Image 1 (spheres, rainbow, N blue to C red):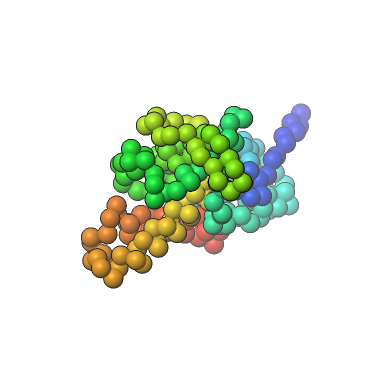
Image 2 (cartoon, rainbow, N blue to C red):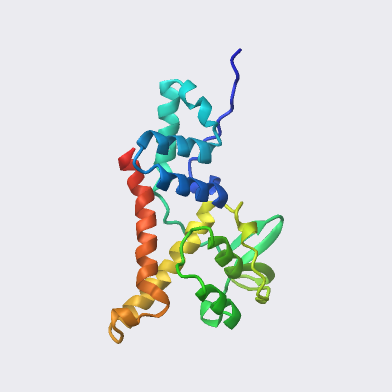
Length: 213
């Protein structure tokens, strides 16, 4: 008896949650030298397709889904989204990073690397807080209270996460260019160079996986 399975294929990062992305990234690293296994990971984590059924797909369907997934995998440069909704509550990105609360700055500084990994949800929890008021382009968010809840960002889609990451990377690059004239590379604050290098390698790995497959 044949069993019908519905396959929901995402065609952009806005259809992929942080939870699924982290699981995919972990497995892609584990099976990076096995192209067929990497594709199976993509089907499993991005489409929630049972790996046991993968070999039962006809060639045309398999190829079409793989092409759709590879079509957006490397497109990680997304715009910053100032406002997002989680469980019906509107959250706003820190309106002015130059005036960020000292406690928030200290808590972010505790992380050795700013990148999309298992700790990334915590950083998002610091930067995005419930909106208190809005007036045209101006808005205010809840004061930082030191409570970090990264788990609530696991179901937020990756276009939001990549938008935040690239915004921060852009700021770090600007800071790097401004400080190069007065500081030696080893004196740069908060491991700016290592943060840029680490994120560059992670993003390149996603893009290069298309070539590998």
